[in-house]
Amino acid sequence: MGPSPSPAPISRKPDPLPAASGKDIVPRDAHCVFCKIIAGQIPSYKIYEDEQVFAFLDIGPIVRGHALVISKGHYPSLLETPAPVAAAIGARLPMLARAVQAATGTPACHVLVNNGAEASQSVRHLHFHILPRFANDGYKLNWDAGKIDASNAQELVSGIARALKELASTP
Ligand code: ZN
Image (cartoon, rainbow, N blue to C red; front, side, top):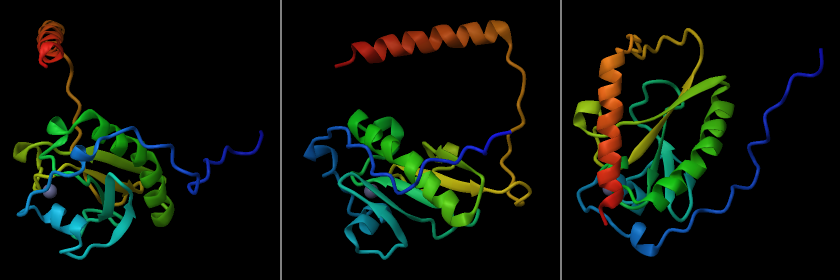
C-alpha cells in the first residue's frame, strides 16, 4: 500500500478571475445587509475578499465554521447573476471550502445556494453557504431520496429542453 494521497496545498495562488466588467460589481442596494457588510457599514468576520467576491462567517451558524460567499454586486439570487460574476464566485468556492475545512478539521462540507424564500433564502443578495461537516455532528439535512418515475422524467426533460431553447433565444 502506498502513501495516502494528500490534498493540494490550500495556499496555492488562485486562478485568474474570469473577466467581468465594472458594471457587474457596481449594483448595490442601500437597504441590503450584505451590501452594507461589503461597504464596511456593518462589521463582519471577513475571511476573504477580492475584486468581485467577499466571504465571511455566518453570524447565525448552523454548524461551526458556517461561512458565506457573496458577490460584491447586489444580485437577488443566482438566477439573476451575470455569468461572469457567477463564474468568479465558482472559481473561488473550492479554495474557500478547503480553507474552511482545514480550519475546522472537517473531512467534508456542503456548498449550497438557496434561491427564493420558498427555498430558505433569507437575504436577497446572492450567497453560497459553506457548511463544514463531521460524521455524527448532529446536523440533519433532510435528504430522503424518492424514486424517479419514467414518464414524469421524460416530461421534465422535454419541458426543461423547451425552456432552455427559449432562454437561449432571449437576447
Ligand atoms: Zn446586496
